[in-house]
Amino acid sequence: MQVLDASGRAIEGRRLSDPITADSLRYTVTWDRGNSDLSALQGRPVRLVFELNHTELYSFGFRA
Image (cartoon, rainbow, N blue to C red):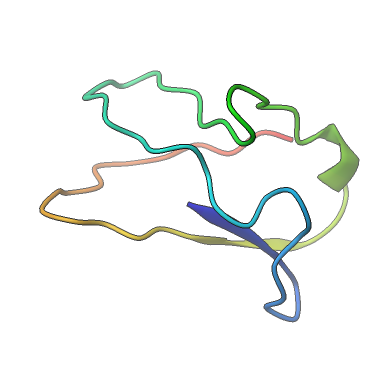
């Protein structure tokens, strides 16, 4: 997963998440080997990009 700014540019440090391999309803996405803090993005419009390979995305929630 990637986090982009409102214009579609990659946000430094959030260009590509750590691989997601779990089948879970409550999985926390991380970047930089375990960092899940997105508080610096609070109040800013962002775009989320999901890249799926032989999988289905049932739902997601986002909290900064």
